[in-house]
Image 1 (cartoon, rainbow, N blue to C red):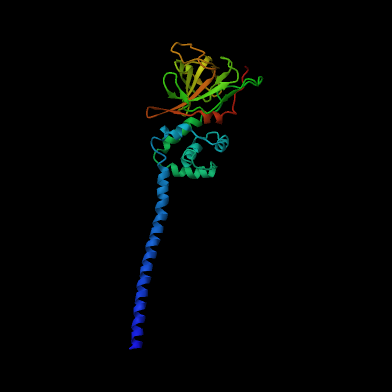
Image 2 (cartoon, rainbow, N blue to C red):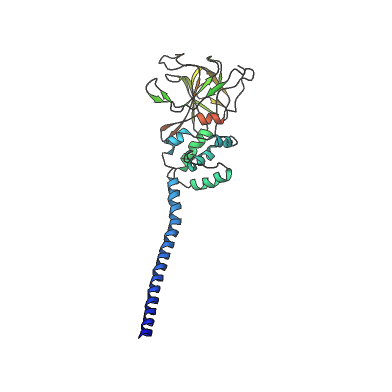
Length: 295
């Protein structure tokens, strides 16, 4: 009886072991399936999250309008004649500068293939190219004879302004070293067509030029104009007028309400809506490309 009991006990244990192994195999299969599907869906979720950055209203977003470009990326795009596409990819991949992304040609080209299939890529790319791909010259000429005559500027995007009501500063002010109206020549940053010329209460004597890719470049507070009219075509580097201190008055010719300077603005239009973008990075991009003038 003892030997017979041992045999029965052996088979009972073997049966229990087989059940345990079967459960383990089931757990392994379930775990494998979980890992397998996680490997498929987690990247898809991450990619979907990234793709969500490219919304139909991306051109109106604070990230796009600020035009953030780090010092490192600025050095890289200065070697690119038409940097709009590279920056379009950079801003999406870096979440407008909040994450790291290399602007190397290979990585940019690879990332572009991912984004170009996404809805909204075409209009977003066109917006980036409109801001960047027509830029040729810094808007204030430099004097080769007088080193005292220089200019400076800082990123004053959306700084508070109060004339005419509380508002944000939609541009960059270029300040001369000598506070003298009519001294510093203002030149066109791009090729284009003069769409607006004349007096504005806020902008004084101003010009608005439509560049080939569609951006509207706004030059304000001029002291005087060159011999140009609305409808004329201009080339990058052409003289537009001279820096002044006009504006902040309903009466045409109001002067002296602020120091002499040039206000530069860049605007896009999407679905009949105006979009102002920060000109500061664009000015940094062309800072080394200056027309020389005798003044």
